Length: 166
Image (cartoon, rainbow, N blue to C red; front, side):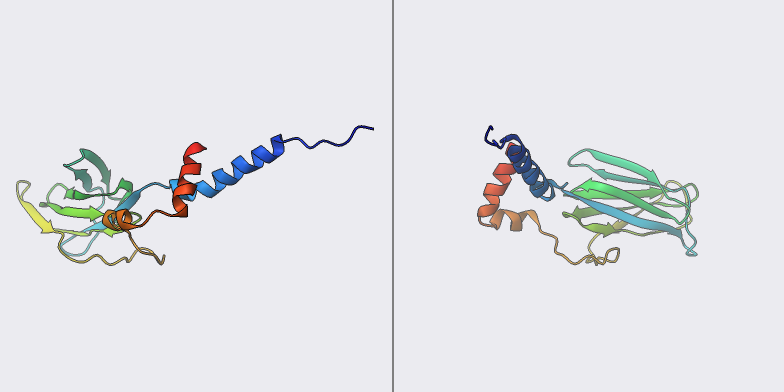
């Protein structure tokens, strides 16, 4: 009788699968979400309003229309600062909010109250108010890039290095 010899192939496959599963959360997207609603001066939702998100610094541009509830979502938006959200609809003044800073995994909410007006009028809303997370019950903290660079390297470096090999 031949002695039973174990093959190394299942072991190698198991190790590779382990690292793929372990590294999956570390390779997550670095994005956030910008969402809101558009209503008129009486509080009625504005359906079909054009909403544009742009970042003049990076050239990022994305447009959507408000849905039946007056809501608009911008999902998987790259983090950064200097975002501008513009809203326009025929018969209403064009409005925008600028200087939006989007952090990792943040849901930034911006609502617009359109006023009846001429097409040529433009109303500016500045983004100086503090944002409160009202769209998620998730507990956590948004980590800014300056905090991330201050974190000392540790065993995480070894894990990230192993993930880059996969």
